[in-house]
Image 1 (cartoon, one colour):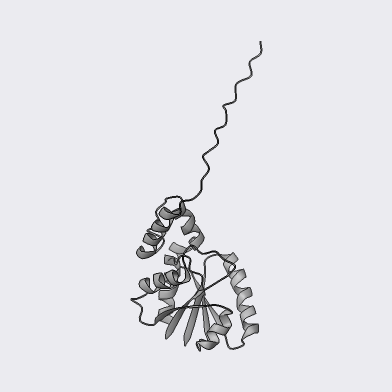
Image 2 (cartoon, one colour):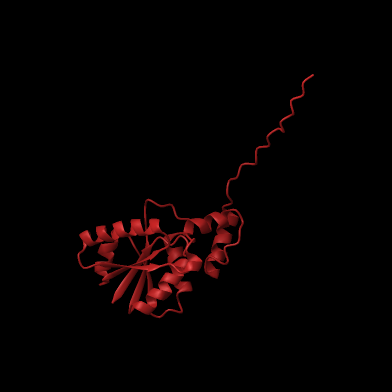
Length: 178
């Protein structure tokens, strides 16, 4: 069976890679489908994200990386995929993903959603967290594949955050009667 693992992957994290590797063991083929989402403003282009993921999944022969626009169910139907693969970190992910799974089922009755619980070491991890750390000069080497860490460091070197200098408040003077 073919599974689609859709997402914006801006950037791909080790948590995403963990889901891809585990999905690779469960399905005959996993298509990592990088979504072009007009409601998001990614730091990396669609082409760059596809290239990043291809590089860090090249050791997985049953994984294909592609991009798409539109509805995930339409893309799954085009690719003859019967499963949408999704990772769950926390309870709030489950609520959102369950709603999406039910919605997808109304769009195409032949699609199933398979949820994989994120491995413990990645349960806190999101692309947003990674970008926030990298933006302010923190190390993300332990959170993303090496090639992605380099791309992040380079991106924030060229696009440093606009940080206002801290406001220094005057020290309050003690009240002295007299």
